[in-house]
Length: 113
Length: 106
Image (cartoon, rainbow over all chains, first blue to last red; front, side):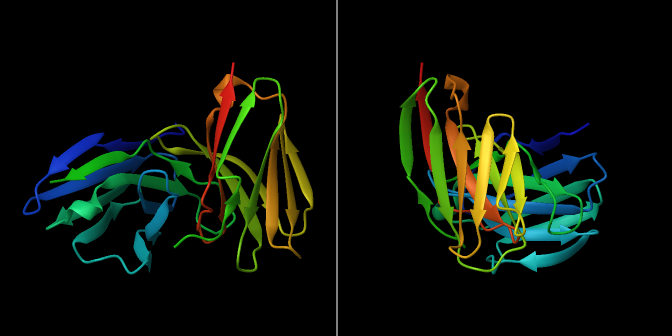
């Protein structure tokens, strides 16, 4: 299984809502990533988990809260988002280490009203 | 944050022609990767080139790396309509270039 799955595919939420994005992989990868991508822009790294521990946080606002409950799952908890947070949120996984190909999920299209 | 610029930002060619995309980066690297993204979807890894390699091939793809100029190029030969996508380079700290939007017309 070489697939990274993300749910939901689309999410619309108000600024006062709390929601979560979910990412799952069963490739035995020990590194997992969250990216944010605005239209016609490259992906921007948000968080990196390595062996279920947060190793990189790219100065992301606290209204985004990542969680890695186990080696196969990665969540992104959302609270009090702003309209400018509307974007495609991509999850990826790889073998641990910087030399490795990342496998991306299809993304969650988030709209904040 | 973004690593560097890609050139051109957009490229439109006819099927069968070759497409060349360039990427510049700012920091020293051990490797550089190229990814492809179909409209609004996840990225797919194409090729990784290490800093001690100057050129690498994979099928119709040819990647070059010039560490003295901090630049890389991706050549797609004999392009097909299915190659229509955005192409990004990424350094090992997963900072992506701005990307080139390639359109291949049938």
